[in-house]
Amino acid sequence: MKETPNSRSATPHRIVVLGAGYAGLAAAAFAAGRTKRRDDVQITLVNAGVRFTERLRLHMTATGQQLADLDLRELLADTGVELVCGWVTAVDADARTVRVDDRRTLSYDTLIYGLGSVADTTTVAGVEEHAYTLDSARDAQSFAAHLDRLETGTVVIGGSGLTGVEAATEIAEQYPGLAVVLVGRGVPGAHLSTGAQAYLHTVLDRLGVGIISGVEIVKVLPDAVALAGGDTVAADVVLWTSGVRVSPIAAAAGLTVDDHGRIVTDHALRSVSHPDVYAVGDAASIVQGYGPMHGTCQGGMPTGVHAAVSILRELKGKEPKPFRFGYIHIPLSLGRSDAVVQFTKPDDTPRRMYLTGRRAVWYKETVTSSPWPTFMRMTKYPWTTAFWPHGGRYTRRSDKEMASDATYSGR
Image 1: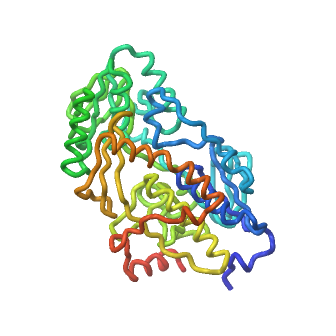
Image 2: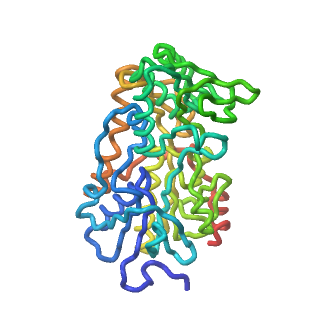
Image 3: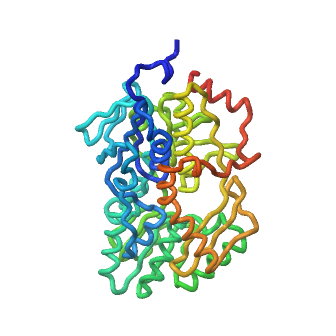
């Protein structure tokens, strides 16, 4: 007979959450809010430090702006969640254990894996040695310190995606004496509607941000970036925002991963090879009716909440429901005084409607500042935070697709 949570001994069901990013912290906070009066569930959250990193604001930290000090200990006080600070060094998915700092071993009954992505500094030569990233508050602060030492010079942003655009406009606004150049394969804002993209380029032009698109950086040098074809772009400092990679821990643990190292999940966000492991945020390979999800706070927090809800359903002997999510917007800050917000269809393609200027600034700030208060509400009033856009027909999957999940995972 297959073991279920209810058929185990009277010892607490051990839920271990790896990573206190947007997805992992949502999972831990929501589960804590739902179980704080229960003694049959034990929740442990593992994170590198005691501070929550607002990745949505790291481009501000990178220009020396001070952000709020968000302490995980304060958030989790009186919730019963044990916070373990340290680096996850290994997971044994068969033995159901986690190693922290190669010194401590944690055992789990259910694992929520939320070790998110970091900048890919290995694919292009010289990035590791000569470029800065926005992987953490410390990285962003180091970059800000370098900018403060420059009176004049050129800042090259490697990558012309959303992170690159937000960083470029922030730097251009805060350091008008520096030249800022966006260098990447794509045109900045290419995924926006025609009107929103035109507005974005008007702002980039107003701030003096240079654009070199349709090129590939093949090497970062101490004083330049080298392009395919032999050209170079002079740089006094390089900020790398092109591409991400995930931790190799999931693959090393024996979990089934995709070509990018993300855990392949079934319709409920469980690992298809180890159903006692839930994968959330950009650590997970999640397929919806429109295709694979991409890692953002917008989609990450719902995955964390869904994982928590699903585990609690399993503890009651119920089957988890399918996860469905549809995108609603692309909020893009353009410095402190401007922004553009592109509203989207659930599959993340642009609608005709978008906001610009002050209304967009207010909207973007509202979105960016909402996670921490939401986490606080999760610990006290969890059901008020268990709602997100499900995407309607865009996210429905056929019975055949759902059945393939179960077949692939051996259930």
